[in-house]
Length: 439
Image (cartoon, rainbow, N blue to C red; front, side, top):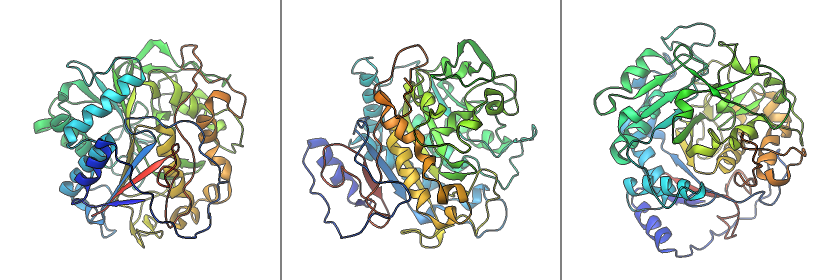
């Protein structure tokens, strides 16, 4: 795994741009140590830098002593988080500047979807899916005053600032949404001021269903008809801003983030109305997964040009209170401190594969989450996604419009929790490449 400091980032990008082959890092003799079975890469990497996942880690971004609400903005260093976001985008796009890398990401997305070799065009709209699960869970309370997890407000602001100031996206063309939850008032206020004035927020109370855009599953899931919100169907691009955290069903990453991307008759709990929870609770390997349908859907995964995992402070599960104790991780490099990280990729399968490796190898998660500790089937959807052209379940996954999907990205596991190396890190032509940016 490459260790990139602020001083060496430009040199790494120069090597990437000129196409020079970087030497594979010297390997130690360490044994594979994961609950998940080890295997060769499944699927083909996608993105401007295929299969690349960038992990930015900086312990200076969190200053929380464990007192007060975890989400209070004074617990985070906005300058450090802004730098983490911008450096991550630069490394993911492989260009010399953040602005150039943003356009490289848009261009790569457009090429892969047969829209031509073009970047962002004026007037195109962007929908950003946040994970606001812990806020407004059982009511329309907009205070955000909960110990449960939701998207870090400072990280959200930093990503929006980068979109506006570096990518040049007009704020009025950006909508942040989660139509199953309530955005905290303080979050909306801080993310719509000054340079961000004009950004829209769409939650449970103001989401409008596009009844011309029902979700068509690749399997008979039963339940209500589910409609995508208009803010999604009107967008040219999607950004998936998910959480890295445990869940009572195992884990929550970019795939499950779209449980808040549809509207049905159950406004408080759309996944219940959609009858989707049964496909995660007690899931077995080689079974259909609705998460793969989300990845394949032409409006959701099909329009997503960036995936980001919020790993600033990680919760052991969706229903757990975040405390200073249970959110400190033991594995290297955290060593008893907060995760203080973000991960970005253009490959939805690769980023969730890396997220799964972090979670399943972390005692702070596995000691509080029996599903994650003892059930390797929580990665079933990653096998289905990596092998989507011939899915183990036998499901023919479609894009929601009747067209079969043949590739969504690449799935594999790192060699071990100490080195965290994937196939491309080891000099192979296919697989995941994990780039690390540390202070």
